[in-house]
Image (cartoon, rainbow, N blue to C red):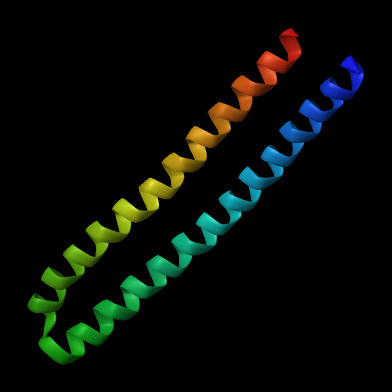
Length: 93
């Protein structure tokens, strides 16, 4: 029974690791999309409003994008730390 519980905990750890890696990949792809979106937004706004207005609007867009991306990366970092702590607890048992 004890071996079964330990094996179950190890499987849980591996599943968490796979989920974290998938989340990292999604965030990297999202970051690339955000960068491309900001560049395209700048080009479109500069054609419509002129360079100065486009730069001001882009600053707001970039700031919002940075907060979103930073939040996603911090969530992944917290998940990694939590997973490492769970692994250490499992190893100490």
